[in-house]
Length: 253
Image 1 (cartoon, rainbow, N blue to C red):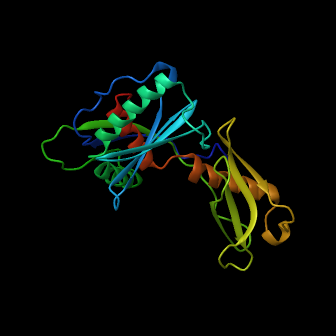
Image 2: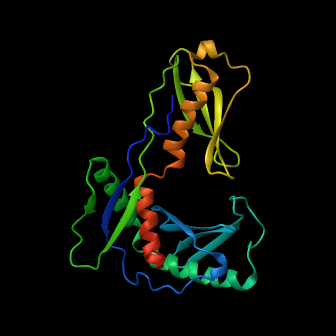
């Protein structure tokens, strides 16, 4: 039901964005930390920016406003830890860098998130470049490669299915099923990301009647693996654009 060779082609996409002033002016991070993966979210009601800095050896998350910088740490797999996973000196340098980075990103992040969503719509419409009228301001050209999705068949079993996140390590989801075509509520399988390979793993629930489901267990697992790849492994185009823009602001792209 899922053939990894049946995949839409990856495409290059360009977005012309206003990333504010001071792009690329931050000092370098400690070399011992390596290159971070950057991400961000914004709470409009609280006017709060949340920044995520993920390294191979740990993570730093911070909630930021004009007058506040609240941070906490995680280990490399995202689990809570007491204190920094790094030594004192690189931690102090990282916190200073993260604060400067957040202050640069804070004024532009609301428009950046909106522009990235609109750019993703342009990409879905078959366009390869996004630009909007910003007036006479400095602009940055962000080029990204957007991975093609697996060509996945619709659910061919009986009833209806849905999938949703559940609590647990390694980003697990559950596949829910209803035999009569109603709101799915019976869990028939699970999927999660293997931290060693960054590939999805699947497992069927015990006691599931495959005849009633209308597909063999292996067919259900194959279909669920494709769903997991498309929805939970491949980043949404807007997210890819935002991450690339944050890297440009930070001077690491």
